[in-house]
Length: 143
Image 1: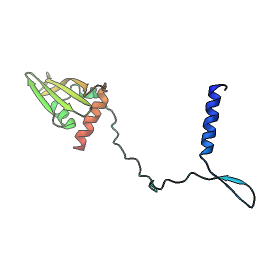
Image 2: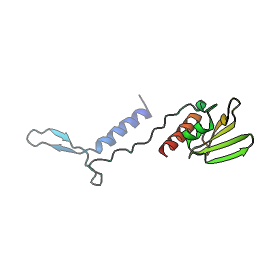
Image 3: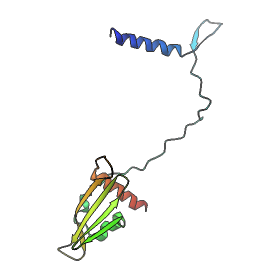
Image 4: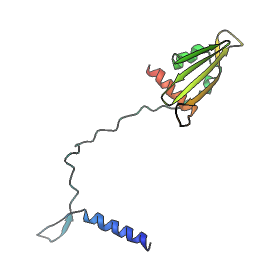
């Protein structure tokens, strides 16, 4: 390393060395570097970092063809419902996303099933459908 890069490294080393204090042992003449002074305002034992709930994304494909009762059991009551016969739209809202479920009559039985779903962002960031679904499952489980 030569030129400005070497000069910058050497300058940084000199500045760091100047921050340390030394003490001389009078009996042996040896010098020891003193440890940096402790901050008197710092806590003796720092508090542990808070634990965050980890949401493991689940594939939202399990929603497809799911009976309406099962979807409501897993996700809770929808934050918004719209009836446009024969379809229904159920909307679940999280802080970062919105999950829309489009339900239609089950051709092979009674009741409604999820025919289509869509995860949308709430804001400028793109949304991962699996993460959105996982967040809403965790919210429902927390109750």
